[in-house]
Image (tube, rainbow, N blue to C red; front, side, top):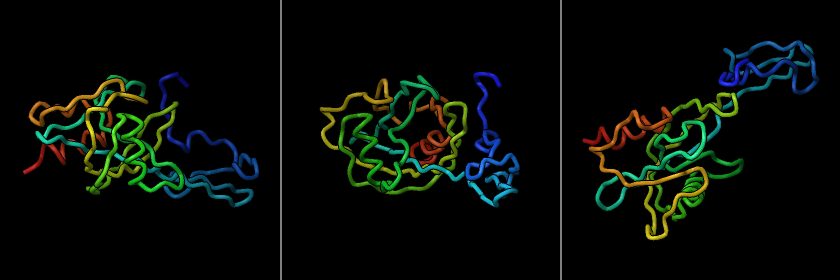
Length: 180
């Protein structure tokens, strides 16, 4: 396997995680593995994440630039993974604070998008919850965590191909560029 190979989760299992048997097989259209020895079934469920659309009073979109792989140097939107036991709305507030040092509030759920996030040689399947939100006190905004830069960009200057992740690109196109 080359360094740049990205695998589906099912391709990483050689043994049953419960009993250690090598008698495992794909199950449920490759969304799970099943052990022939003990009957254990392990499903590869999607991880939850949030994408946050923030626009300033001039209608410009707050975009970030990714500091690390995957998609280092590409445009992104604030957001990230939902932690176990965390509500999506709380993840939205946490991620915006971690990445930009500002407080998000008044989240408005828009829609969901399926995504495949390549990380550490594995595709992490995600269900991305897209929200619009407002932020307080832009005077304290600064790039942090996995964000190298941020900017407010006029919608007419946005180029979908500049965004690294498919789901973020789709969110920008659907909510910003295809507005009626």
